[in-house]
Image (cartoon, rainbow, N blue to C red; front, top):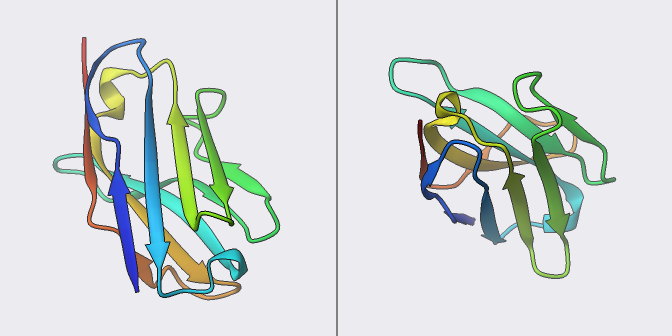
Length: 116
């Protein structure tokens, strides 16, 4: 199983980034997908998730600014991040889990830095 995250970088406050996560070795369409982030000195937190059926869920801190999506034909999930704030600075990780299971599969992380 491999999840490969990409798309991070340095952006000014108010800007946008789109993260991608390409998966292999799993039954992609049958997995729930998520994006976590971890800022220095803080616990890893779930930012957004999307079920195999397409239901999405967001942390309150990113609602209205971030959008999670998936393309089952490409085995890829995305996180569109708009109106970025300095507090969004973190390492972002993609994750996958079988329906009803725990987040068992993780990508390597991609750094997002938002300057003020």
